[in-house]
Amino acid sequence: MITLLESIAATIIGGIFILTMITSIINIQAVGVNTNQQILLVEISEDVVSVIESYLSLVGAGVADSAAIISTQDTLFSYSYADSVGGSPHVVNMTQENISGAKQLSVYADGNVTPILGPFELSDFGIQFTYYDVNNNPNPADSLVRYVKMIMEFQYDTFREDIDKRFIRHRIQIWKYFKNLYI
View 1 (cartoon, rainbow, N blue to C red):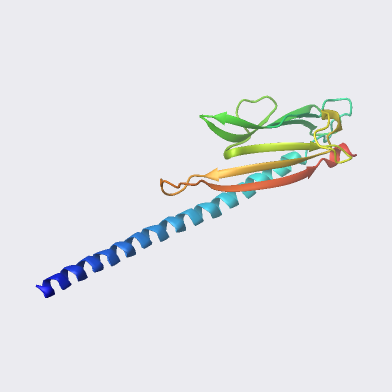
View 2: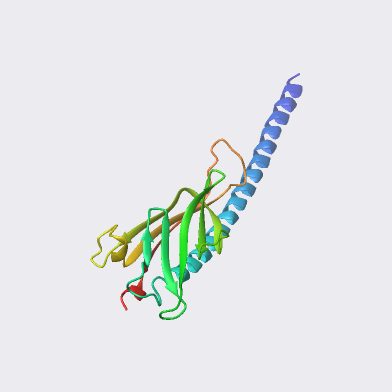
């Protein structure tokens, strides 16, 4: 009888050990996939920021001083540039949109309804623009803006749907000085 109880106890302990090992392997797999997704999110968001910075470097290029160059809002940045000095101006809108209940970043040009960049999924934080004048005062009038601080937080869904599910997020803050407005 004792031998039977010992073998039942050993079977239970072995089963618990095997279950623990399988659960550990599944958790390691989930962490590995989430880590891979975090790396991809960082790479993609850095590429997006690189392209956005190239668009921001055009602010005011070739546009006459009398033209409205910049229009500012908390989640929309609109600006003008021209291909050549005195040429016809192009208008670019960087905006946060709410599409199907999710915040997304899109860049539009010249009134087109199709974005030239995006949409990219943002977290609940979304995007935030803070505008500064030449004296480093935040939120000046549109005609006084000389640089912008732009904060974006991208997100990616996790591998598993758990009780403590958290999105994979990557927040980026960039400062862009509009050198064309000083020339």
